[in-house]
Length: 253
Image (tube, rainbow, N blue to C red; front, side, top):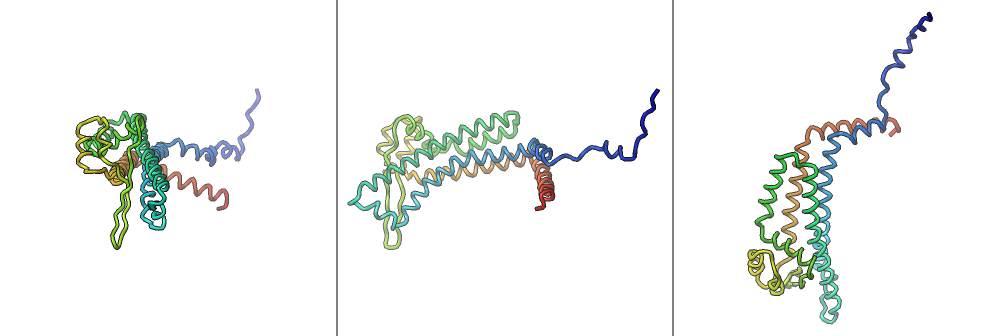
C-alpha cells in the first residue's frame, strides 16, 4: 500500500481560483443584461437617425437658399435650368424623407414586437403614445399618404417660394394644392386638410413639425427603455468602469 505524498505549503495557493482574464471580463460585460439594454437604447437612436438625417438634408437645402450669394444665380430667370435642377433636388430629398418616414415606422414596430412583446405595460404605453401623437394628426396622415403616391405613382409637383423685403429674404418649397387634390387619398379628412392649406401646402413646415413630434416620441422610447432597465444599466456601467481601469493598468496607460 502506497502512501499519499505530503501536501506542501504551496499547493493550497495553486488550487485557488485564478482571477478572470481581461477577455473573460469583456465577454461577461457583453453578455450582461445592462449591455443588452444599452444596445436596445442605441437601436432606437439608430432607427431614428435614418429619418432625422434625411430631414436635416432637406432642410439644409432650404437653408442654403437663404444665402443670396448661393441663391441668386439659381433664381436668375435667364438661367431656368438651374432652378429646374433645384426643384429636382428638392423632390429627391423629399422622396428620401417620406421613404425614411415609412422605414422608421416599420423598423420600430418590428423592434418593439421582437424585444418587448412580453412587456404588457411598456407595449400599452407605446401604443397609447402613438395614438395620442400621430393617429388623429392630419398632417401625419397626409405625409403617410404622400409616401404611397411617391412610391407607386409620381412625385408631387414642387415649387419654390420666395419672399422679399428691404431687410430680408425668405425661401421655402411648397406643393401646389390643385394637383394634389386630383389624387385619390385614403380619407376625406386628408383631402379637406389639403384644401384648407390654400393654394399650396407648406411642405417644409409640415415635414419639420412632424420631425419634431417624431424626435420627442423617439426620445421618450429611448428614455423609457433606460428606465425599465435602470438597475441593470447602472450595474453594467460600474463593471465597465472597473474593466477600463484594469485595461489601463495592464497596458500602462
